[in-house]
Amino acid sequence: MIALADANNFYVSCERAFDPRLEGKAVAVLSNNDGCVISRSPECKAMGIEMGTPHFRLRGREGLVFRSSNYELYGDMSGRIAAVLGTFTPEVERYSIDEAFLDVTPYLRRMGKTPREMAVFLMDRIQQELGLRSTAGVGSNLYLAKIALDITAKHAADFIGELDEDAYRRLLWDHRSLTDFWRIGPGISRRLLTLGIQTMGQLAMAPQEPLYKEFGIDAEILIDHAWGIEPVTMQDIKNY
Image (cartoon, rainbow, N blue to C red):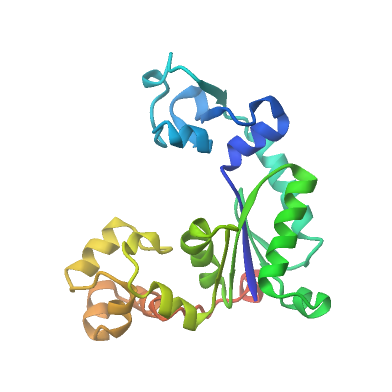
């Protein structure tokens, strides 16, 4: 069983952990040289502030608090998160500065917890020790853990998503848009649309020859993911 932990609004959350006076305020973290918004608090989102908005367009906006990006702080907090996760399992693989995969299968067996109970415990530990709120995706493979985090967890009351292959097909085969799925950007989505494919269910059922003609060997990845299959394991990543 794979878990993927993600710190919510990571840069803003780090700034709040460093300066608790920012809690509850509309905080926007700006890119290098204060160019544009690269992280925003929920209060910022409620004000309609979009990611990538240039700073000069927001100057003078009442109620907004700006912070210049502090990558030394964010890197330190990322390392602290990894250390907390490492207390659950030595099998931790960072995916990005604020996301990390964990193979929690031995932990579940040892502690007798369900995947959801494990996720709650993990999220509580991150908040208690670092002051960061987090979201978790749990899946029967790496891909499903990522999709559980990206799509289902963000709409769950407890911010936990849980998917196996059956649940993935039942819940997400009709989900739109395709760009919500890992590795499918606007370009791939448009190319799939030329083949009449708008959902993962349609992709799973589509004839494979046109897919291989359009995408080459990459069609194999698309087809696997349409079925919720991911052959790469944590051990494969470690070996690589």
